[in-house]
Image 1 (tube, one colour):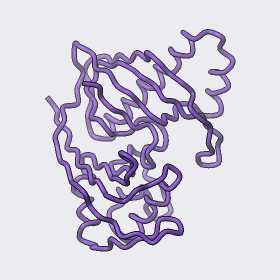
Image 2: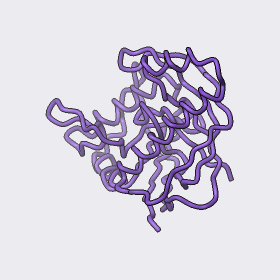
Image 3: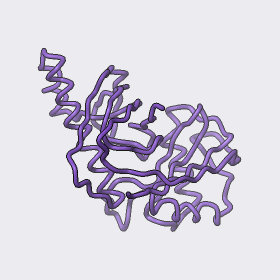
Image 4: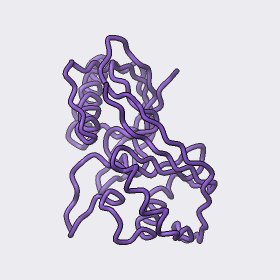
Length: 221
């Protein structure tokens, strides 16, 4: 049984959805020369791995979700004591409302778990064209399920977990939400419900853009 450390910093500060990249930039600036996990860059090179520090909007307020090694790296933010930041044009003093820490089992089970995933970015330009060309809802869901399975495997690899059993993902509902430009590419976000035989921690992200709040999952009790 493998347990994964999760630490969530909840702030009292309201945050609008479009301010998430600016909030991320503010934290990175406040922890200048801190751990690479804050920004996934090193000497003009990207860290091509699952982000272990993710910037979120939870109940309309700013939050940071830390996973695995990220739970240790977040200490750089607290030690900086630099809570006066700029979020876009707003000068903000960050106020911590709560810090929650837990350990969650991440593994494949014989039973399944139900999840919501919000603002999921599963499709790039190439596979979006294939998705739109498919007239069958079943084919579309099968395509999304394969992508979601890959997203889960990417998360597991990023936190050092290897599954010995086959992963099962079943999307029960998927709605296109809105389109946006992410890294100069036009993409469509999805709100979806799915079942999987993998136990995943609530509030982690799956898919593209997870460091900026995309693809956040919520496990249904």
